Structure formats: C-alpha cells, structure tokens
Length: 184
Image (tube, rainbow, N blue to C red):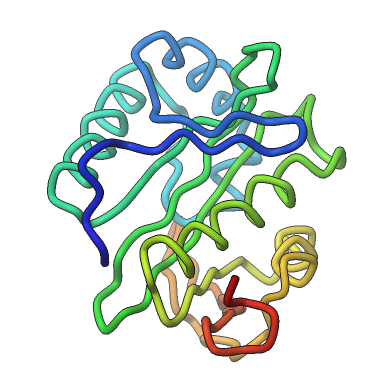
C-alpha cells in the first residue's frame, strides 16, 4: 500500500469522508446500540459501549500510523456524522472494504456513494490490485451495495465466521484495478 503523509479527506456529491474524531464517539455509540449491527457484521459487539468506540478510534489511528488502513467517518456535507467506512491492507496488494451506517440513513444511497469513492481511492491512490468485501448471507442489502460499486461475487466462504456459537457463511465480492473502467 502506498504510504500517505496525511490522512485524506474525500468529498463526494453529498458526503465528506474524513478521519474518525473524538467528537464522533457519542454518535458511534448511539447508532451501534442497535442489536442489528452485531447481527449483520462480524466485528461489532453488542452491547456497544463508549469504551468500544474509544478502542476502535485508537485502532483506526494506529492503522493509519502503521500504513495498514484508513477508517473514515461518513459525514453529511452539513457536518452530521452518519456512519463509517474503511479500507485495510490484507497483503499481496489487496485490501478489505468494510462499512456501516446509522439506521436513519439506510436506503438513501449514502453507503454506495461513500464506497465508490473509497474503492476509487484504494485502486487509484493506494494502488491496490484487488479490493474485496464480505457479507453474511442474511444481509443481502450489503451484497447489493457491493454490486452497485462494480464488485462481483467471487465465492461463498462456508462456515467462515463463528458468531454467538454459530458458524456462518460469508459471500465475498471483489473488484480489480485492471478490470475495464477501474483505472482513471
């Protein structure tokens, strides 16, 4: 992954993607109080506490400092924090994309808009060859986002995650730099 000296701020039509900040913590905790986030993701605990948010903020800062990843807060251009999106180096010139958004902002195209910008950043600025993302099969909406940003379903990873004592399958989607339309 190409190393950047400063954490970038990425602007889209409706959003500003910028580093997570201390003042985002109350919103992160408020949004992630809903059990559905834990049910739909492999790494968001329930209940979600302020300590969890602070730890995540520290991990995000360390990932940037160690050149292993970028976690962006998703903000409306008016300034309201609405979710988060990240891209993290998984070696061999590939990165993993992950995201979540507050329930009041579901089904408005915000994640698709943010994810398009982050995939572009990952392929064309950080020079990854491959960006992939996964979702639980019981969360098909996430797969639809992946398809909308040009990812294609690559594989279903059987019993890939153990969560709450149950083994769950993950669908994995990918996009490659060399595919038509991905080089600017």
